[in-house]
Length: 199
Image (cartoon, rainbow, N blue to C red; front, side):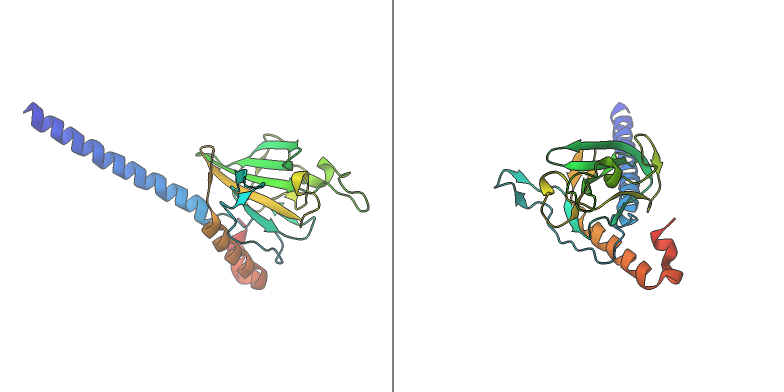
């Protein structure tokens, strides 16, 4: 009798774990499949550079570089809370958004230039008005601007865009490509597709 009860308990545990994992996967897939394209510029350009070797072979690229005209709006890919607003020598100005459930999006090399003066714009040209640490943002809201701060100085303006789950960088190229296609459709047919880009 004890063996039979234990067997049934194990079956119930396995079944419950499977159901919970399926629900978790569905929730995660929904987050990734509904993300907004992070740059509001129809001339944006990107390719699958996640995992490329960078820095003279010293590091692996853990994001997607999205090139666009300097000053192009960078938008939150989903609702969330501003987790980080910071500057480092390598990253330049950057922002991180906590989307809850373990997901975090990171936007690096924001604009720090003003006309005629390289690197003198600082936080005022990097981050959008009304963006502050702990502040809530919604999908599609402008949070900053494309630039070349940090070790991207002198390169083609771009945002290093990264999505992390539980602290680990996640390869989201296919999801970014899908979000670009939705954004492109919105630009071409705004009256018929506004709901796929803006909430």
